[in-house]
Length: 623
Image (cartoon, rainbow, N blue to C red; front, side):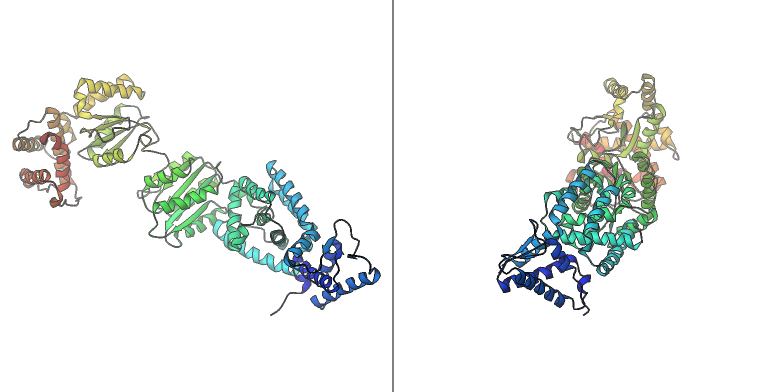
């Protein structure tokens, strides 16, 4: 084993040896020894080829000389003693505590750090640059540069430089100067922090400086804290280890703090997210993304915990948060993260490296939130983006038809052709509307002005969201038509546009409207078949449907037949054994009623279509 020379060891260690030998002399001659701080420093800096043995001999000679010159003095005096002199007492029980006191007194650590913290606090609170805080720390380090030998400091500096490259530059893209003087100064700051931690309590001034750094340089502080955890987890727990921040981060803080968004990558797998993070941050040359590699069985609550902990460590003044993830519910993810922070939020799914790089470059250019959000919607058909709370961030009308999104899209086209472009029209199928109304509150529909459907929505669904839900077939009723006109006027639509919309809607919902919707089949034949099907239901259940319901059924059935001829998509069959007796009866009856149509048009009416029809008719046939 090769031991370091005494002169190459840290000053606090050298002082410990000198104090130990002074304590031995006090015990041996049973006298107190009073030594001047500068004399203790001289002993700690004693350089001899015999190292520690020579130091012990030197202490014995000093004590013997003091005793020989003034044996009557109690205590023995070494050097020019004054009120700052250090007293060594015989039979000292708690030697380590005493040595700590000796080191603190010799280096004047208490007054030195108190003055440093006061100046740093004033500098941070006054908004001065990190250059000024670096100067204040460098001035103190220059005064106590004897705390580490040059050889030891050089080795320590190389180790810190290597760790910084591994844990910061490689992952976060942040680079540091390569010159040796810079890293020796950083190493010296860490040594000073160690001396303070070992010999001083965690004062309120030290804790305040740590908080002030986090407040003033939140992103840089986050990186530096991450670096401390990699060096030694105990470092994070001591406020003194945040002093080297000013020495190490001086050249990169400005660039790091220029990033205005908190960006997060979430991906399943051991390295997926961190691999993309490393590529993007390195190419952009700055810390833009933090990454969380998630286990396959991770829950949404756990993901939310990752995000919440990260955002807590970031600046509350950021322009917004950007979250890219690889799978899961977009709306659910948005809703959960929004609970953590009320800042603007963009959530994008189906994470790719190209997507992350594009967002990283836009953040680097300081693009505004809206432009980043709109760009994220163009990443591909398999990618979804949400950056507003609720269904839409614009005033909107929801259109939902029992016959499917196709019919809803036709109504949407009609609205777009007559009403102003400022009013967004969102077409959804009836099942999705049912789910939205069941699972969301008024806040989700904050921008929704009106919901148009082709069937009445049950009163217990969506009853508390405070939005008018209108069956489009009610447009034939004067009272319902006026209600719709009032809603549209409140949206800022002109009377002329509203009248034109209603006129076109009436034509669309008539038999002539059905003819206009059919693209392939002969309207006369298809409508005739639809009328025959409706008539069979009336006969079997001994009911008489109203004209409005009949018109709705004719359109639904006609479009269903054509859709099934042109679409190859199939749906999962329904297990009829799980149905109620009325449902089983309806399915059995429908199979017979649709048989002629299936043979004529060479189609197979699927269970899904019969289930939709049941939902449309159940209130009329079962009362």
